[in-house]
Image (cartoon, rainbow, N blue to C red):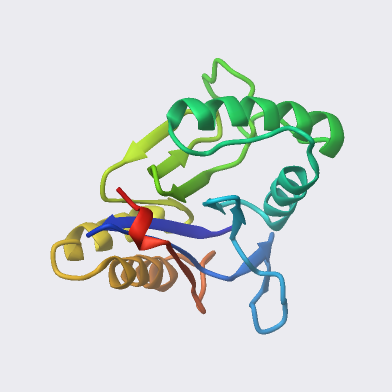
Length: 193
């Protein structure tokens, strides 16, 4: 699995992640795997995927190859785009939508946890496609609670890059399914609100 964090501070937005891949008891570090990215760029948005490698690959392929237009700026546009993507992922990519455990979900889940960064803000998307607009930071994936605590503690002390680094490093230190090295990307700071 993965840890993906997102930070917004002083007109800068940063997205960062670990680089470990795991399958059951098998772990593959980025030293041995060249496609260990956990976030992708689509138009002016960076989208982090805190799931397995296949989820990231499906999402990237669908975005690049669909004739439909998608927008990830603002909650309504993200939701509309997710509904379109859900149909495409089910039909063309055989997305498994059954919850992996019994839940009280009222909609068919995508089973993907996403973080989105662009000039309109920072957003989190749950497996059931609910969307949150965050004002400062968020983390999702394995070690997410550790990253949130660490970023909360240092938010007033450092810039966005350092806060994101601390979040990912902390998650990697205390969660066995996350590992360094880290991948980090700055969203164009001059366009951030």
